[in-house]
Length: 152
Ligand SMILES: [Zn+2]
Image 1 (cartoon, rainbow, N blue to C red):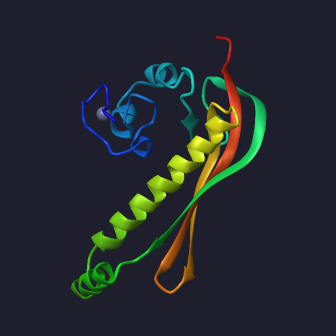
Image 2 (image 1 turned 180 degrees about the horizontal axis):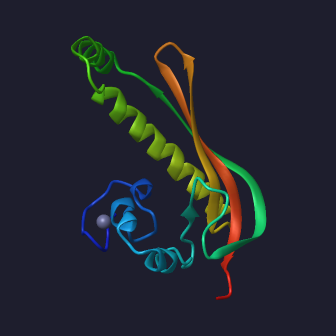
């Protein structure tokens, strides 16, 4: 997927605030441009950690939806991360793994929302649990809703 503003190529929708604009470009828009950019077009879903979306009203709540991925840490990744732990600083090997798992869980959640006819997901949260040693479950969940623009 390519951002229409900066032209950068991203591996998934997780890095996008809208269907065509990446999170980074979106943060640089004016508030008016942001509302315009988030206007639903077709199956595009808006997602937010808040429970409201500026300029929109929730007309229907379709309930809780979620996406789950389960990841096992490879022995090499664990060894590398152990070394990094000794050296100190940000453990990039785990950061990358978590980021990928979150992106997958997020994608699944958005797909689920679109399947049941939602055009937005509010109250998006992440959660992670160790299922067993070295195996982590990453959960992304939120409330699927149908929104329409508020009359201006
Ligand atoms: Zn961009």
